[in-house]
Amino acid sequence: MNLKQMAGIEAAKYVKDQMIVGLGTGSTAKYMVDEIGRRVKEENLSIVGVTTSKETERQAKALGIPLKSIDEVPYVDLTIDGADEISADFQGIKGGGAALLFEKIVATYSKKNIWIVDESKLVDKLGKFPLPVEVVPYGSQQLMRLFEEKDFAPSLRQTADGQTLVTDGGHYIIDLHLEEITDPHALGAYLDDLVGVVEHGLFLNIVSTVIVGGTDGPRTIQAVQ
Image (cartoon, rainbow, N blue to C red; front, side, top):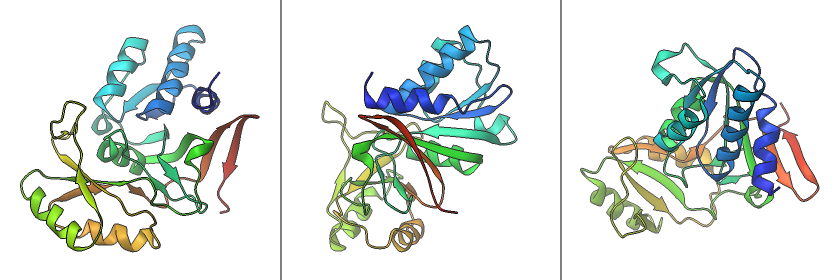
């Protein structure tokens, strides 16, 4: 069993009967969704899933997990999702899979969030992983220019065949190659204020439980409250 699969299966244990569960997106979350699908089928687990991307929606439907959209539920009991980087103080970067907007919406309306990662995602400070910024196409080149002036080393995300990537929400993604983010909260506030920025991949003060797949098995780490 690989490290991502290990973390995904461990996280699925937190899902209980009658829960409304946010289903994350990405390579690690995929294993978690598979395991929840197995429990629905084999253990008669009764839940409602809320997906964070079209990709996860397709996967969950194929597994027979009942689904509702975020607008059809009063709240989400628990969301389990991956992360691209998690700092020592439990702040995160997400959006490598281009689903950051829907992921952040679902996370915001969740009573509890759990992130599942392999050991490589744990860092002291954020920033080595490029920070995704989801932007409206109209004016995106102006934001690119602004980010270049700020020395944020921006790049417009492309698909494998060289086209500009378009998110499930119909937006573009500009990745900022920052190397190290000294003050994530200040950077988040700056990006929030920019016209044309829809959302960014800094997930701050959202999670307190992280499940890490390691060579010695999965371990759960908790933020000090």
